Image (cartoon, rainbow, N blue to C red; front, side, top):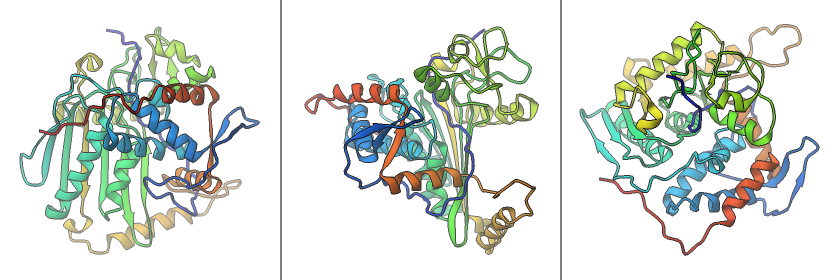
Length: 385
């Protein structure tokens, strides 16, 4: 069965650059500028305050209440400030859709250190954010917290957001996500996997946790939508058309084609398969025709480093990270950087300027959504069983 890529959410990997001022979660610039200009690169430069408020209004057009809106907004802006395409593109491409028939979110706790969440087709970001919070609380009590989620069908956004939330508590955070059939296994024409990202945050002494956020696909699904929105070609070797031929045309990839795994080979394909199984069948999520099933899964781990008897882990992890950064470099290499540093550096730079570049068509679409916001319109609070 072929699959047409029409909607979903996943997380791209990040490029790396050292950050001297890591961004704190959920905070945006206090700049008050409301004007915007066009950069030479073609991006529209918008004040972060203007972008935040426009995004907030656009989210509310879906009918979310204040609490849900702020949760979604925080996660989207985390990604947007880092140059991660899990940001505001989701607002204009139905990536934050609200199901009017959603049922109350149900949380069951099979054993003290674990929980299972039936999302009831509520928004994936809200459900996964709660899963991370539960994992943290269980880890504080038992040394380990394991939470699986199912029955969501919208984007969970940048997994680094949730993993870092755990890492900031001095715990090891691991977050896996599964989604509909967007990615072809090695050697296949047919899309079987989601883009199946992984977020991993590892604490260290004297610094922010190191946070990896990467898809096992060569490109994020919302990256295809960004390319389609802007009319720009895809990079080479990230997608194929419905006949299995490599393409740089986002439309060809979306029309029955598939995204590739990150090395176009068996290593990335096998890693994606593992995530497919762990964040799919293991947590009670769909494993076939996942888009129609509207039942995508996530798996969250929070681990106290001390449960394995090593009280010096934070010092040792810091040592290893610095050893990597200070390794003898090849000619022409100016620095060796850790996962997440590029995003933190870009976010810090954007915050310092108080502005950020946004693709013009995306900015126009976001403004159009925000213009539809009616403060008197009915809102639909998320219900919990």
